[in-house]
Image 1 (tube, helix red, strand yellow):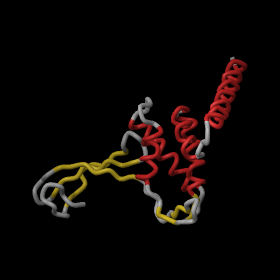
Image 2: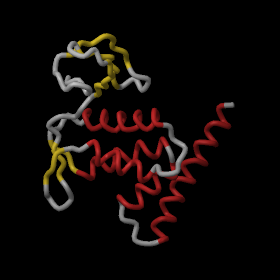
Image 3: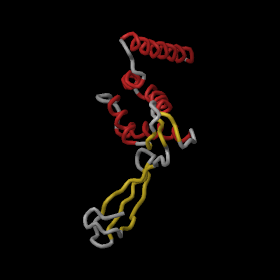
Image 4: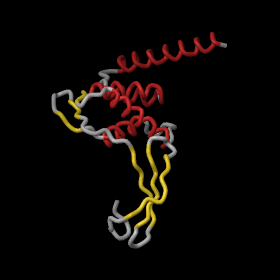
Length: 162
């Protein structure tokens, strides 16, 4: 790891801790030349994952593309940075559990929608409307009705348990 102050590659780790999100490690480092102290973060990275697009093109997995799409759907929604990181980690974990080197963009979309549905239903509808290419208000309305029925049945189950 290069020192951000003097660009020397000789640094030592002073302390390592699991970050608050539970999915990364925070390392406190010190440059052996100039003594500058700084922190680095290590997180799980999906390696060698190829995405097959709808038109057949292939490209490497990009966490940045995933987070950008999620940020758009979660814009102005009440989600903390920590919960956002956990959401991304759950999606990437589900991708890894497929144990494939090639997956389709549709598979990613389905996993994202499953996790968004549990996290924030407004964000889920936003994402689904783009991902599923809702053609009109009627399609949008049908998806909303599915959510409403699902919520109603969950409330009914909770009431029966009491």
